[in-house]
Image (cartoon, rainbow, N blue to C red):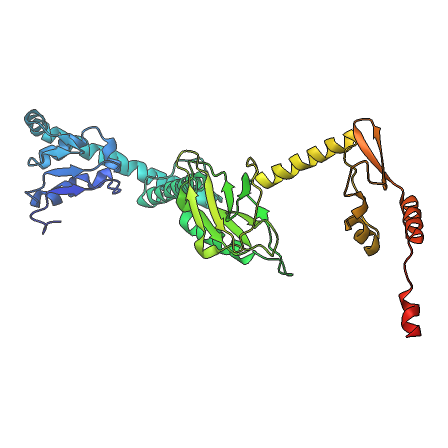
Length: 373
């Protein structure tokens, strides 16, 4: 560090500098006149209470030591105790060396006896400190890994939704060609129709973003992918009724979140919509009611279905003998029964009278005269 003339800050934290090397280290820093901040926390010599005053006395141009500002009074106090601190440092270094020599002899004797005491305090060496800090780093890494495993995993919702759509398209049909209907999300839905369109209404939670919905309309079914769940329903009416997928329309309510899919029919037909009155149906119902009332009163008798073509011709034919309803008609005998009239025909009597009238007339035989001529 002697060549670093413009060095202003030096961090010697946990640098394993023993107390015996403190004086030599301070002498090496005396060449760095621009040094203003010094950090020595975590070194073995920091256990000595006088190490700060010693460094201030050896390096009077320092402004901060271990993050603490050095005042003018601190400099004066350190300069006054400079010699005293040197003597105390020399004494402590001697005691430390004596303890190290004694510990070395003790360790050597234990090795000669065949072992060492594991509970005995190990010497304060850089190797020991390095091993200790390595173990601390490993424990910290394991703790961070456990905390990270507990945290929720980051999810890519767009990618998950795209995968769900692709998976749903791959499972649209059974092997025999039928539509595979499903409702994986358990959504409430309903179908309505009129003369021109089918309407599919799906109840989607309103807080769900529309980007998480995918709606596809096919000629025979509709598919809605909600997040990673699929709703697939066939169009009502079976395979014969198809819709125009290119003209379909999807809408969603901002208040309720409901999804409405309009499906134009390919073949429009007459459909009776609930809640609407059909005038033709009402007229037929009224006609049936009047007919039943007439039958109950005896004025009208409902004809049974003809069993043959001859019976149908006879029922549709007009009986000329019953056209005139006066008393002079010899074919009718009118009798009053209840509220209605009942006509009784005597066909045999009329034929007998007509034959008697013809026999009384003198008509020449034309065929005989022709033969004689």
